[in-house]
View (cartoon, rainbow, N blue to C red):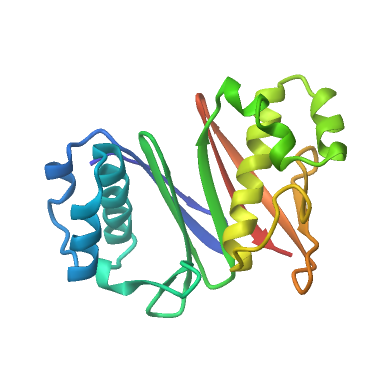
Amino acid sequence: MPLLKVIDTGNAIVYLWKIEESVDELTTGINLREASSTRLSSMKSEVHKQGFLSIRQLLKVAGYSDSELLYDTNGKPYLTDNKCISISHSFQYATIIISNENVGIDIEMKREKIKRIAAKFCSSKELAVVEESDNDILALTTIWCAKEAMFKMCDSRSLSFKDHMYVDFRQSICEVNANVFNKQFSFESIDLCDFLLVYAFEK
């Protein structure tokens, strides 16, 4: 069972799984409700199926079953005991964060191609800071992950990564300024060689 890390932040717990099992192996020991089984069957990609099932394995480690994970009308996950949860998976990693407070998490592979799309999710101010950094791919991936985590926390599908969110990766702070979402967040990042994990909290 490749549970890679369990991180207690003080006000949340992060669970990280490195996916090394087949789909069949990942179904061992978990019971999927009908809706989840239907969703799994509809997935074409083995990678997506592995990510989906790894999340359920992490839930099991955290003491929850698939039936205790629900989604609101915006697709934001929550737990039946009213604890907050955020979910992410990318290639061979899956991760969740659970807290009594609003939290967000994202994990991404660090790739060269992020530089080609940077202008789509970064403001000119953010891009100027990235240009001064020693590692532009790491800087851009940090910004993307932090914004993904914030996006998940704000429970809205109308937020613009470029226009409504700002991330200062040098100070691990970020903010959302959009209509009623005038909020500030802090985030932590964990470098996993070719991947980056970021989790965020509302300040």
